[in-house]
Image (cartoon, rainbow, N blue to C red):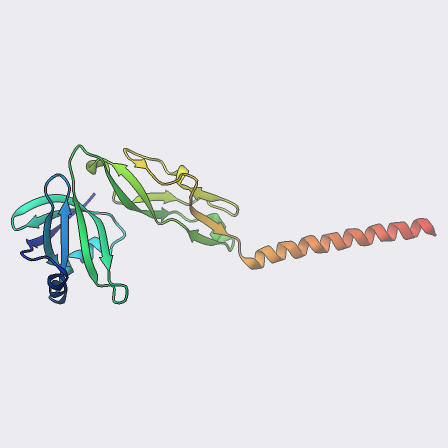
Length: 210
């Protein structure tokens, strides 16, 4: 897993007023916790772009006034209207202690069902994993090259390599939705066949009466 660097500065004052001032200056109020004591700090908001707006998961080297901590982003809060980052929580990692992370899923291959007119429904875009920091993947690749009508790829189908999948194995990751036009056509064809069979039966009965 790739590692990004975020440079932070310890906060002398806490509280809502101070946090508001920091955000107005383009900074994010943060806290890091884990093996040691909690450290409250702030970091430039621009440094969060490659960490937050990416399809990959990353580890973070927090450099807080020269003290470097290997961490993961544990939680992040956004403003409900303008999506400004309001606060970020980091978890300091320990080399031999497993950690839990949401890891994004990337689909690979072309589903046969799509070629027949179906719609690919990407129902689960990330999985919660438990692993040692060194074994945590950037993403999980899921092959959809055999996904056809009536099929689904479930979490149980994902091969776990040096990590544990915590999510329910029965949950679907991707399915092919049959277009309404195809479903309707199939139903109409069956109705027409039934009508033809009924007509043949009636004709047969009339011949016998004569």
